[in-house]
View 1 (cartoon, rainbow, N blue to C red):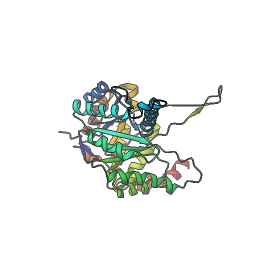
View 2: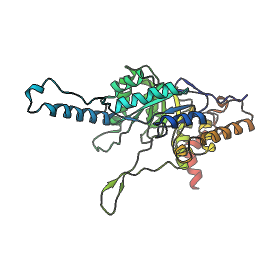
View 3: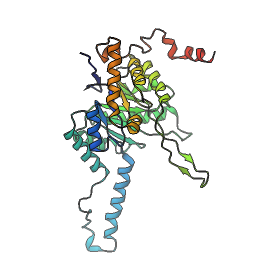
View 4: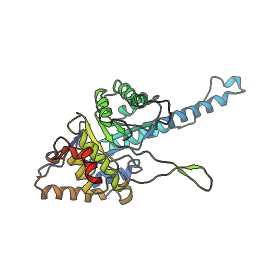
Length: 327
């Protein structure tokens, strides 16, 4: 019988397809649909560190304002009845999913500053998350900041969290590092259990009528998968942590390529948003059919077989491929 299982962040998954952070994983009924369709794990929508901190400041301002001009109220600052902040709601959702689903639930923390992560990470761990994904959504726009400074921000955050939580931790990275391979190696040294390649920075657009910046959200395109596949192939066998691919995986062909390159898991997002959770059933059937047709007995048998270390022409992942293309 075909074995489609894989191991990711130390978790035993029934297959490599993981539902990435999206509105689908933020809704209990949609999460159930994802599980029924065959995804092996889900990543919750990100909990934004700055949002929680802003809420806390607003609450402090509200409580403080009640006492202004009322001496007798100095010791009585009531919080609104049944008040729940963003963190409370997030933890509630996490606990509901853990009670309703049989697949692993991976929480996600997103932020820019280095404050607050440890406390929120500990609460997420205590709420029952199977793992924690760190999404440091940081654009280095300060021209006085060096690449080393940016990397150290990630490493310091990971190190601090590793000292305070004992569930698996993965770091979601962008491709905008001078040396992706070295950065991943440093994250491994500081205790990362895995990396997710690559984050997508959303680009603001300019409104030509108002001359104001406006948010611009676009779903991924299939061509984006190639960058992820290439770096997975370069890293496989050179680092001893889990590798997940995310961004542009819309077809079974791209999923197969990521696995051949060495991915332990492939995140799906845009394709599930556009085609619905049930599309995962078709992808899993197509993946199984491909494996059976080529007489593979398991996912593990083919994982990494076309990584740089195992490829017939390893140099094709580097400069020689560029030379061949432009000839």
